[in-house]
Length: 137
Figure 1 (tube, rainbow, N blue to C red):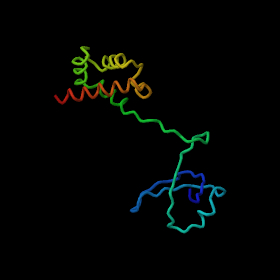
Figure 2: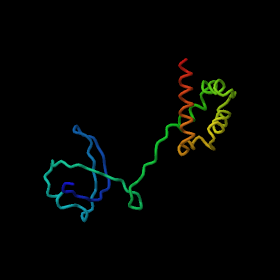
Figure 3: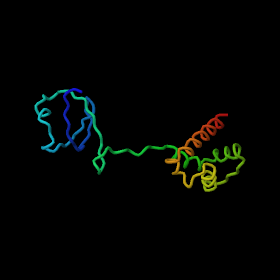
Figure 4: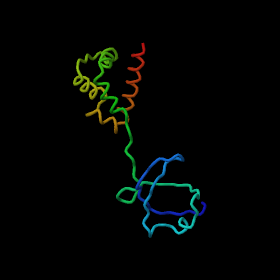
């Protein structure tokens, strides 16, 4: 790899200019590489950043699962209730009944379990696709 410099920094600001975003990073004086100080303003760099957790290890961002929010919305949707009746022969007449049916059908304790239960999430995604196709008929 080419001559590299490494240092730890803390994000202190982010703003937008006509040229793009300006990222401000505070660097402790002991960590500031001399080469960086000597390079002229306008020097180009390839930047690689890794957010650190409290143990000085790479931070793992939580995965976003839109299925959880979607499940909540569908349990309030009367059209979804009708689809459940058509697809599963289960009659639903309230959000509470739909929530209970949902947990039973997808074998989960809570709709939030869709975040961690891959099998239930995939089954829900397929069921939702069936519902969306049914609505278009």
